[in-house]
Amino acid sequence: MRKGGKPDGDNKLFRIGEIARMANVSQRTIDYYTKLGLISPEKRSNSNYRYYSYETLNRLKRIESMKREKFTLEEIKSSLDLINKVSNDEQVNDRLAALQLQMQQLEKEVKELSPLIDQLKPNQAKNLYKLLTPQSAAVIEALLLLLGKGPLL
Image (cartoon, rainbow, N blue to C red; front, side, top):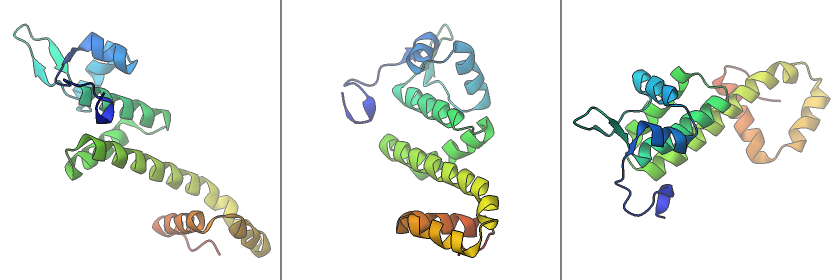
């Protein structure tokens, strides 16, 4: 196996049924994602069979992971399109997608926590702040500022 989970000779292409089984999704899902522009076949045969690559398999896994995190297909498409504009390197894209997913998840959690934090008494907020690592506190404060809220303390 080479980097990125690709076997040597990774130019192998898969028909829709094969890629669906490998990604643990249905063929209808593959059709739907193709229609939405989330994925696209690498090529078509003379008999109009669609062939997909390992890159498509990795993209399908990213899509399914983001769906489990409750992102809409529109949000997923925007996110993946943005990442693809940054780099064509699969490893870079995988890492960027993972980081973006983590940041979006943190943003959702901060939005959920924000009303609770606002209700804390000053001493409670200070005690909470002391329990956080400096990096965590910095990320939370940055996200609160991005969301238009004031600092934690």
